[in-house]
Image (cartoon, rainbow, N blue to C red; front, top):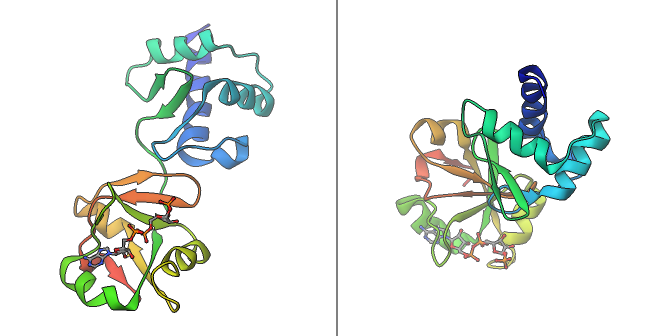
Length: 170
Ligand code: HQG
């Protein structure tokens, strides 16, 4: 394969794994990984290619940067996922005073869980309160201040703790 061909495939891989898994009919797990065989089949289908696992390995080994990782039968993009400007967190009214003071904390989990759509946020919050509050997270401002967000699936993003100044909609 020529450099140009490898670069073309790498670009399509980035787009699928960072920005638009839906278009390819693939699902990312909470660490951004997806099944490699399905991924290759999806790239071939959408772009009329005939890639094999060897072609994907060639893209990884010939690349100037480490953009992707393959672990067993799965592949992910290591960075650059697009994140909506606002994402949501559904919570209970009685948690608000503490959240205002301490920000959103992972509590018993590894990460704070966030939802891209308000409906999911409402369902998550309803587990704690019959009238949940939907907080909005300003992801741009939070990222600029060093908060890390991790791709979940289409509906879920994860984050380390988020200071209250990046939360709106109390
Ligand atoms: C709150 C389920 C006081 C936070 C769902 C939340 C979701 C604070 C609660 C996933 C706080 C923790 C996650 C602070 C955060 N003071 N309360 N400083 N910071 N909280 O259940 O986000 O069953 O651990 O607002 O579908 O409700 O795991 O997290 O209300 O996707 O598959 O502390 O859990 O999925 O509650 O839900 P949770 P969550 P699974």
